[in-house]
Length: 263
Image (cartoon, rainbow, N blue to C red):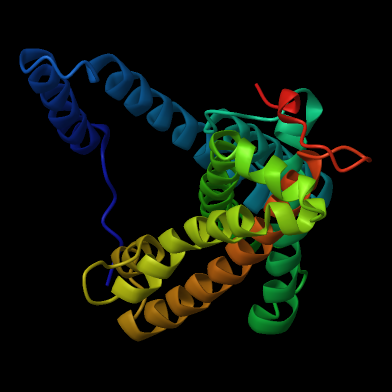
C-alpha cells in the first residue's frame, strides 16, 4: 500500500484542535493553556528540525554526525531527568546521575540490539540506531525521573527514620534499603503497565507508525515486541544504577545522611 503523505493543511487541522483545547482550558480556568500551546509549538519545531536532520544523516551516514546527535539526545534526556524532580541533587550530580545511568543502560541495550537482534551492518546505520536509541532514552528517562524523585522525596520525608536506623548501628545501605526498593518499583511501573496493556488497551506508537507507513501488521508487531522488551531492560537497568548512585550520594564517607546535597 502506498504511503499517504500529509500536507501542511492536514497538520493545521490537528493544530486547530489543540488551539481549541487551549481555548477550552482558558474558558474553564484550568490555567494550562499557555503551557499547552508552548509544548505544542515546541513539539512541532523540534520534530520538524529532527526530520530535516535525519534526512541529512540518512543520506550521508557519517558516524561522527550520528554520534554527535546521539550525544545531544543523551544530554537533553539527562537534563530532563533532573528537571522533573521536585528535590534534585545539587551541582553536576543533578544532571550527572541521570546522564550516566542512561548512558550505561540505553546505549548498551541499543548496541546489543543492533549487533545481536537486528544485525544491521554497519551498526551505526541511522535508520535503526537513532529511532531505537530515541525510544530507549525517552522511556528510560521517564522511569528514572520517577524513581529518583521517589527516592529523594521519601528520603526527605523519612529522614528521622533513616537517622534512627543509623544510630541503631545500620550502615547507609541498610538504613535506606526500604526507600530504595520503593523507588525502583515506582520507576518500573510505567513500562510494566505498557507491556501489560500492549495490544489489548493500547496500540504502541512504533507499531502504529509502521502500519501507517505500509509495513505488514505482523512484522510491525515483531518490532514492537522487541522494542518493549528492550525498553523494559533499559528502564530497569537505568533505574537500578540511578537509584544506587543517588542513594549513596545521600550519605557522606562517614555514613551520615546529607540532605543538604539536595535542593
